[in-house]
Length: 113
Length: 111
Image (tube, rainbow over all chains, first blue to last red; front, side, top):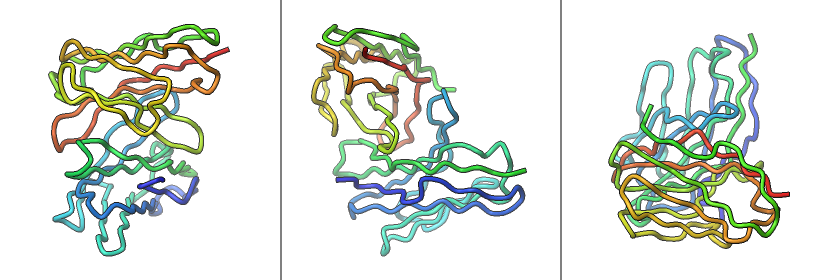
């Protein structure tokens, strides 16, 4: 059973606009959430994280929002740039996971110049 | 970039042959992981290690074994490769409650 879900396989956004990528999880014990970015033929690279004691974390153009009651997190990219075109994975971990990270299936973002 | 190296980067092998993939880190991180990435499935955990000689299964461990005899090395072995194990394999490292860093990946094709 997929504990972390990304229901949108792809997303297209105009350059300069906001990109919003969504992620849902089922395990209420998860308390640490991460977003990764992956270019073709490269390994995933860490982008931003949030712990369950917060509901928002910002890093430059990237903001992650966490809604614990809805078991939902989202990544906002503002403004979107063509170099942001990549596959984005959300991941989750928790005290009962043995430091394992559970990943979603990914969303392919295309930023159109 | 975190000091993590996977070898080989590409491999083609025949069905039924054994294959070993190597992950080497220079960061002295406690945790090491092997994931596979397949279309429609994202990243799925095969096995992970929480210390030297301490390993555990992930969600897709059938047909795979691992060993960690030194902090810096984590080996993934396919005892008898099958076509369903054609995939891209990623090694990752982390410390407790911190983000994981990934290697560049190994593309394995089983023919």
